[in-house]
Amino acid sequence: KKHYTGSGSSKLPPGTTGWPLVGESMKFVMLGPEKYISGRMKDCSPDVFRTSLLGETMAVFCGPAGNKFLFSNDNKLVTSWLPLSIKKALVFPDFVDNSVKDIAALKHNFMHEILKPEALRHYIPIMDSMARQHIEADWSPRKEIKVLPLSKKYTFDLACRLFLNIEDLEDIKRLSDPFSRVISGLFSVPIDFPGTAYSGAIKGGKMVRDELLSIIRRRAKQLSENKDMVATDLLSRMLLAMDQENDKLMNEMEISNNVIGLLVASYDTTSISLTMVLNFLAQLPHIYQEVMEEQMEIAKAKGPGELLNWEDIEKMKYSWNVVREALRLTPPAQGSFREAKTDFTYAGFTIPKGWKTFWTVHTTHKNPQYFPEPEKFDPSRFEGSGPAPYTFVPFGGGPRMCPGKEYARLEILVFLHNVVTKFKMEKTIPNEKIVFHSSPTPVHGVPVRLHLHEK
Ligand code: HEM
Image (cartoon, rainbow, N blue to C red; front, side, top):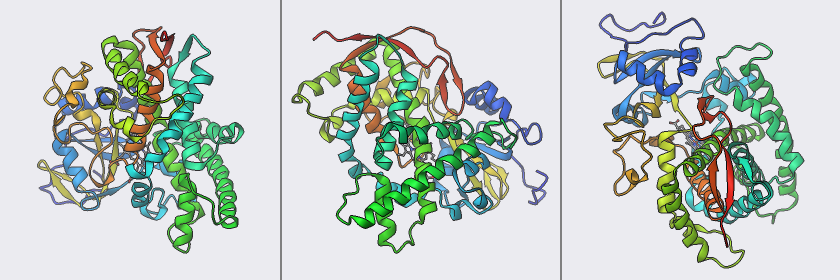
């Protein structure tokens, strides 16, 4: 408000900006985003309200109309913006003050190109064989397992294989240890004291980048020495693209930023989604039964040892509705930020240039107007034409919609297939609490007892 220079007749959105620096971040975390946002919508405005999160004044846009407005005004009224904690952890600290575009942490079009459905199809058998290996090694020998840590292990190992072509366990560990520090501090308040999550994320980010740079240099050398080498992983494809464009498209540093961006964007989101899907299946026998029947049909039609392919994924219609319903009820990504490029008006309120904006899944996903009996797990909501536009937004919408949506769909469905065709799961802590870190997180990691199907 202090910096706002608009005309006297302008009306800022109602709301409160809380304590200096910390703002409303603590309340957001303590109440959880869902409660915090529905409370503010009730008290302030159901269209747009003002708050302060991550050290920034922010306008939270609400409902399908708010989502539509932000999605369709990308690069017109609003532009990309990342919190300082993410920028510092993800990119070289020297670049932090430049605009997000200069940092080029995520080359948007390139990401969409390499992650488009046609490009991902040949990853399905690799995903399947890796899921089988993980189930064989970590699930089958045990009677009880924790779903969350094993989902994280699967998604990270798979990302290392598909993004970087790394399979050696020691190499993976050198990345995964510092990487978990980055994840823990990604959405932290920007206070850089030793011991804070923010400071841990910056240190972890540097270690991950150093490791990535050495991988990138090694791979670039291999590619230049062996021109016939087939690029099966995303890193090699980025390096080849760089080569073809005479180094103009991306330099080493940008490639490392892109890879770390991919790892961050995919890690928590897919491992939490997978965990929550399996959690619902363990909890709801009638849903499990239908998923299991669909997956058994697919398994029966395969030859011994034959891996899943694109046609099999296309048959997983009910299972995908189950995944979507889990994404509606426990969305792993809470929403995303933008910055106002200019003063503009929305719902009768002025959003000043420079303010940050936030769209979030929590203004529609559990609104009974769009999802009757919103707490009920009901995959049939996604049959036919499905939910109303801009109400189901786990991946966002418009030009900046998550480019990893298809990768996530394949990764989750493939693992789900491997679990339900082998086991029935029984939760050992039936009403396990879910807390909010940067994503919804079950406090005990979803421990389940495994019951092998009889042959
Ligand atoms: C269930 C899993 C996932 C969910 C729920 C999810 C959700 C999201 C959301 C909400 C955004 C922000 C969109 C916006 O700014 O409006 C986003 C961006 C992004 N996601 Fe995902 N994501 C998932 C998995 C993935 C995966 C697997 C990848 C990569 C393989 C990925 C890569 C990205 C990238 C690169 C961006 C930034 C796009 C840009 O700014 O142009 N995501 N995701």
